[in-house]
Length: 139
Image (cartoon, rainbow, N blue to C red; front, side):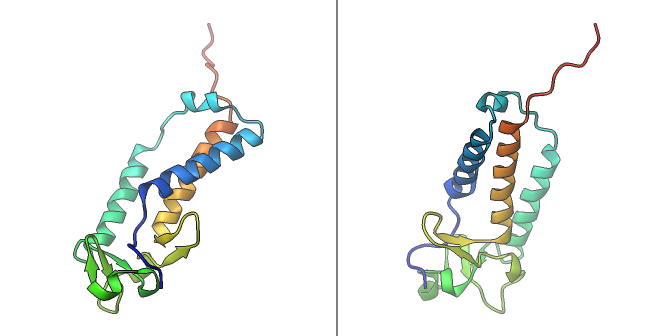
């Protein structure tokens, strides 16, 4: 059983894949300056992902279920803050925090957390590697 408090620090979900995408992009010949020209084309997609994530949490009384193996102090308390111990009475357990990783990203993660991190890494990598779009307007 993991000790401490479950959950996904924002730093792990954003910073680790962002840095990994940057480093891989630079190592493959990309240019960090390409990030300045990145265009955000699908803002509705990000909104949809956030709505789905919150709907899953709301299905469990506004608390995110965490597997007992990774729950740490939840095992003794049943719930702490926004987290609740996963059981047969919690809903959508396959979307809960049940994936654990060792150092340096130790914690309890949901499949959605991993998809978000993967998306951040891929977008960063592609932005660094791809050249910015050229103006194709004829003059």
